[in-house]
Image 1 (cartoon, rainbow, N blue to C red):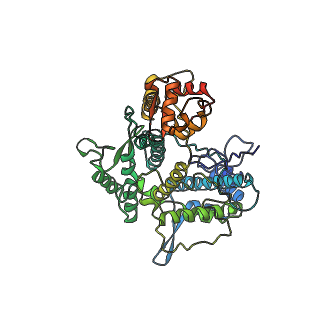
Image 2: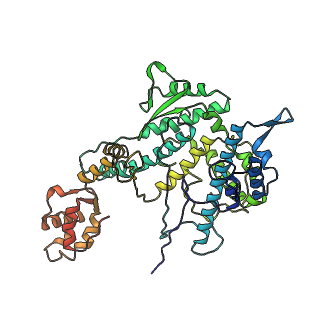
Image 3: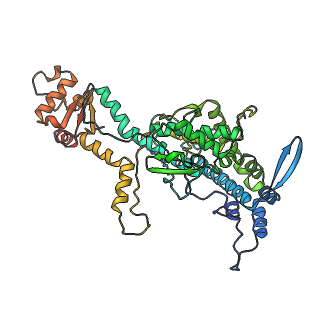
Length: 484
């Protein structure tokens, strides 16, 4: 019996520990400098924690990296002391960058270990190969104050919700049109226009943000541009008399309206941590992540250069942080692979990188058979045995679950080609005079009449039969039946 392999894949939101325990524990999971465990209850001063982290990373210049910044001004290097909140933001960014690289490294090692041949070549899925990719995603976020991070997270949810809509509704409508059958229409809330507003070049929100970063504009100017470009879009919620249009914008997401405060948008979008991450990876304790970082950067740069960000929100499109199927880092390039020059490359931004990641993820998901698990939060107080009917109903509506159930009830979920039905049942009905002379479609019509299947339980398409479940059970009684 052939062995079927189950492989692990990277997801947008990972839930695993990094491979090198020393460095993350020294830096701390919360984004604050933490000290190694001591017997005393009182934590040591921050200088001791910083020293411990530098020792764990074998990085003598960690304090300089986290507390100061060097700028080249007209050929002269200037050293700038960072404020406490700036250093804190920098630390969080570096931790996120290291965590993502460590997780990608772990996934690549697992895929290499589980490769069929055990050799050094990167895995490429071939005909007959069976694999399972698990994608865990961020939940939809709507806080008192929502910033750039929430926009990225909610955009990812919009993209994955579009995949669900395509699998459940759009693809269904395409099949119905192709087979020329009539079914009762099921209305659903399409989020295509919302995604176009966010990602389509050149006026999508992410592209406007990149433009403002490039010309060193202000957050208020960016916000005013968003309102000016998308005032006619039903997914941008306008305030009364233009109130607050220079400080925030509100997007009508499938899960609800979210107001985004733009104060830190430009700063967060421009800071990608590339230079500082490279400096940190030069330390001996983190050198093992260097190849993963280089490959991820090259894959992302190639995608951007190929125009991957100019697409609208079509089903192609996602994430070097997504489904790694090779034993090497993203892109299938090993440490010894040749590097392309980065000369002339457009400076990357967080938003640009995120769009490229989502585009790759959606391309990979669209090439597979997707199954969806929708989790419903029972109450907003996080209490056991408490069900908020209003909250649950709101989630079922926004997720499209009610429409999906309606589609299954009104539709004909079992579809079988006429040729397959004729091949399965011809021997069973061979005693009927002249049946072998019938075309596959006429054969199926006669078979339905013999089995007394009600007219309301099936539809005849151009090339296949559409059945309700109870009709499929009737045929199942005639002979072992497997619908597709």
